[in-house]
Image: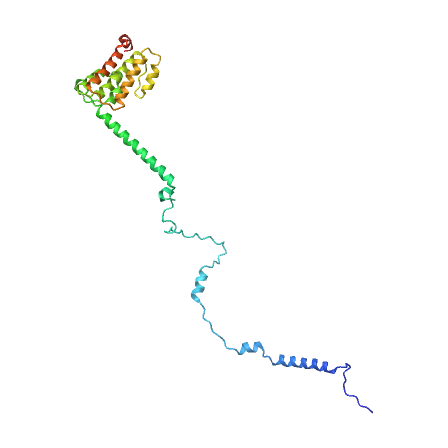
Length: 261
């Protein structure tokens, strides 16, 4: 009788089953050999750490347990520094900084120079005119300027001031007074309308249709050459101008003057 082994493998390759059984045995052995993590934690050393009390107190002050909505904190106003341009907020212009365009700076210089020249001319003209316009009043009254004579031309005896200027040798001023006396008489005659601020061109237009327009124009041009040209005529030259003004004044009818008065 033939005896059979207690087991046999149906597969024709029994070594495969042996390999599978060996791997299972090895895995179980390795798993059981590893230590338990909880046991390691229980047996491990305990490390003591310090608590930052000051930092926690600082954080605790910033916490709000009231339940109210947080308020927006106003940021402190930062003072302007030198990097921001100083303490002033005014923006400097290119001219103030000195970096403006050359053309703009040249234009500004020309404007300032022109204004300064005009102002100097006005001051010199007024000073020169004032030196030749002060003359005494009748009856020993205090001196009166030419501006006051022009303001009160209709009530002023201009011939008195003409004689006063001639006696002092102020022929430049005497020519001006002769011209004012002529305008006063023409205004009284109704030939023109005198006004202190009007120009001689206006008076020439008013006399354009008058028979004595040519004589009045010649007298006006002679006066302007002396007065506005700042010409100081000699005595002989003044006598010729004086006769020219007197001849024109004599042609204004006195009856018309009286009727106007």
